[in-house]
Length: 189
Image (cartoon, rainbow, N blue to C red; front, top):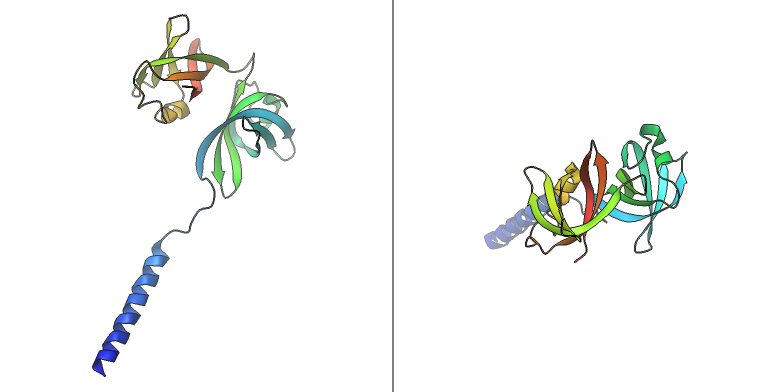
């Protein structure tokens, strides 16, 4: 009888430990959570709802919520007027947070004649401490760009590990206080 009682007590203890361990694990998260960047074209803006639909380069449409903290680079409006800075048909790069199925725009980079410009080149140097990167342009000249906080954080995504002189990129640049500032970049080879 004792052996049956011992087995029963041990079985109960193991079940209890298994349930306690399972209770300590966080619940699974569906979809993507974190900050993501997406390049596309503004399809529609809804001023009353503070939302914008952007068609990504792959053809998928995304509904972004804009808040009072959303910043638009390359636009003249801010705060409540942020939607006025992104016209339908505008090419944009949206840096957004995806959480529980909602996509909230943290920053919108407007790529236009009066917005951010694109520059293509090969990365020759990255200085994470100084938050700068140097690129060699097609004409052979070299340009050093200051990086925004977001671009400096993204520099490790596939660019950092590349050998100097091999990573070809397109950089989205804005002139701020007479100096070129890189807001976003993507590797093209």
